[in-house]
Amino acid sequence: MNAGLGIGGVVSALLVRVADPSSFERLYMIDALSYVGYIAVVVSLPRRTGALTRAEKVEEGPQPGWSTVLRDRTLVRVVLISVVVITFGYAQFEAGFAAYTVDVAGIPAHYLGWAFGANTAAIVLGQLVALRLIKGRRRSRMLAVCAGIWSLSWLVIALSDAVDGWSSVALVVVGLAVFGLGETLWAPLAPAIVNDLAAEELRGRYNALQGMTWTVAMIIGPALAGLLIGNDLAHVWVACTVGGTALAAVLLLRLRRHLTPAQDGLPAPELSLAA
Image 1: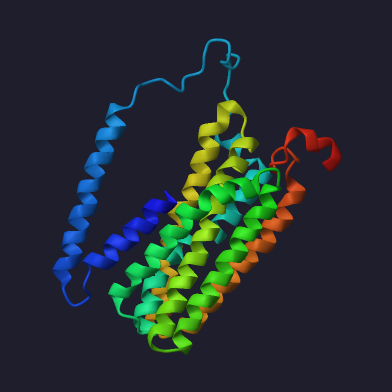
Image 2: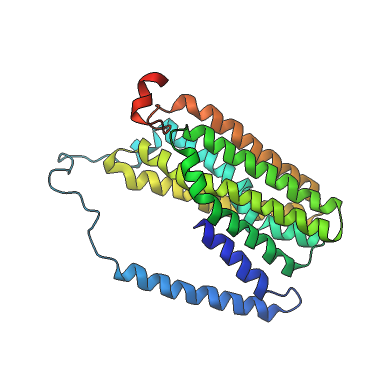
């Protein structure tokens, strides 16, 4: 998913010309056709591969539902923190980043392809290293590191408005590459916490609620970026992105006290030591 976001950004930057509205139409047509291929894959998937076996099925009677899910305060806490992280992280990567660098820092749009390329390279090269790095470490702490990295990346990108020429471009490229390093941590860790919180019969609902954080954040984030940058409040946008991700890092560190060692990702041999 992370690589797809970066590659999509590269393709978009190469195809789009701000002065040529038809370039956006071509991009949207390519995007639409890509979903045709995705639909074909989904339709071809084998059915009932995730069904519970007879031995695994829960006892007959009233089944737990959304009320049970929403009473899990730890899950609700994870979901709310995720909304903050994605609103000021991924959502700004999707919307605010391009608006700030082009309209505020004055970087030509086609140069953004280099930044998206650096982001993708950081993800592809850093993923295996990140997987080894997080093994045996607390998930809450590593997610806080992720949010801290994103805060740093937005600060670097914000500085592109303070310089000119190639220095400005370089800051944007480096900033988005740093953002990619944070992405390699978020992708494997956030879903793992949610799945370890869930009982088997509620796993789908737990993941659905966590997945909804993307929908909510992708509505709030671009709207916030458009409101602030469009009204010449780019400095407020910078404060929101840098400060919002930094706040999320603090909240993620505090999440540790609400998780068991196993939910926080400590391997079994270390559970007794952690206690």
